[in-house]
Structures are given as structure tokens and as C-alpha cells.
Length: 291
Image 1 (cartoon, rainbow, N blue to C red):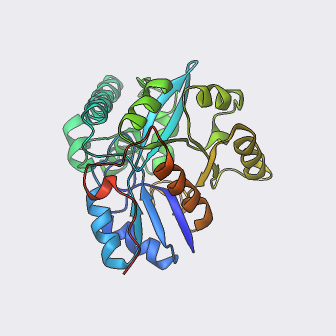
Image 2 (cartoon, rainbow, N blue to C red):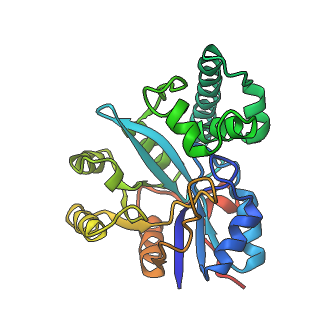
């Protein structure tokens, strides 16, 4: 029995529809999944419904873009209550920042003679949380680049002509919002942050867990982060960070989290004195056993 707690759909920067995602999860024999689209809960109800039809358990999630000491971090929020107004307001604000960033990137590209329109990007993205991958796809679709890699290398990476810095939420605030929505806050892919000293500081802010299992945690990284989690009293999670086919090949199946870690996470959430039971409907609740 395995789970994948880090998945993306077209509601942020993935390519899978909700049905595609669940079909792939079923094909890999996953017993439980969590949708963690960037700065949105938009797809959770839809994926939950598809998962129920496939006999797969589901827990809600989102991946909040945050920062600490000037370094971008991603905080995964699990089992959040979708009725939480403070979280909904901040996610809506983050989505507005993302949309404005797309407009700024397009304006910079236009200044370089690239006749791309922001509305074309939004029309292709069809979501509230667009990002650089959508601009890259629009550049390829319009024939300005031959591949997504070319779009990033020529225009969208840092210090390239279309690069626009990203406004990010303070990490302490992200954790506070997730807790305010009765959820659990987990640091995503710590190996990509290149500064393990940040983990203890995040623990001081209330961080609940560490994503130890991730496709880019090669070598002994998984064991190292499990040891850090143990030393700091943090939960252990993991997932494939699958974006469909937008980043090389689909990564689903490359990481399968044993259900024992999920059971520990659920027990922790249930027994937290400071975490009242969610009241926001099915995708704020604990997963139900597959029937």
C-alpha cells in the first residue's frame, strides 16, 4: 500500500486533467493521493471525486510559495479546510500575483520583439494560478521556440529577457495560514533549497513535517532528511512532484510513500490539541477508506 503526496494538474503548472491524474495513479497502484497544486485548492474537489470513483483515497493539499531569508521555499499544506477564509484570501492574492507576473513577463518579451499576448497565455492555462511553464508553452505554441527547454533557456530563466522576480509569502505566515485552516505544514523537497539550516528555523515557526522522499533526493539525501526529521520531531512525507509531461517524462511512480508514513501523519493531525476537526466539507476531511 503506497501513497503519493505531491502531485500537480492543469489547475497550476501540470499538464494532467483530474481524470488523467487519477488514471495514472490507478495505473501505478497507488492507494492514496494528494493534490498539491501551486497556490490553489481549485482542483481538489474534482480530483477527490475522480479518486473516489477509482477507489483511491484522497487528502486535500496545496503548495504555497514562500520565502525565508530571501530564499524561495515551498510549503505543502495537507488536510486544509477549504472553508478557511484567511487561507482562501491569501491564495487568491497569490493567484493575482501570479497573473500579474505573467503580464510582466509578456511585456518584457514584447519589448524583445516577441508578439505574445498575456490573454493568449491565460486562455491556454485555463487556471487561476498560471506561471512560467504556461508562458513557455505559449511561446512554443506560437512558434517562437521549439521546446519548453528552449523557452526557459532563451527567455524565462533568471537574468533572461523575460525573467520577472516572484513575490513570495513569508514562510512563517504560510505555516500560520495552513495551521489556521486546520492543516499540516510540510517543507517540500528540502534538498533543492541548498540550506538545511532553514529547517530548524521553520520548525520554530511550527513546521510539522519534511518531504524526505522526492525524485531529486538522490544518493543519501532521503536518509539524511529522515534523520533530520527524527532529530527535530518532524513528520516524514514524500511524493513524485509529478507535473504530467511538462517537465521531461512523468515522474509519478518514481516515489511511492509507504502508507505507514501517511497513517502517522493522519494520527498526528487527529490528536493535535491545537487543531480542531475540519468543518469545511469533504476535501477538508480525513480520507475515507476505499469502498
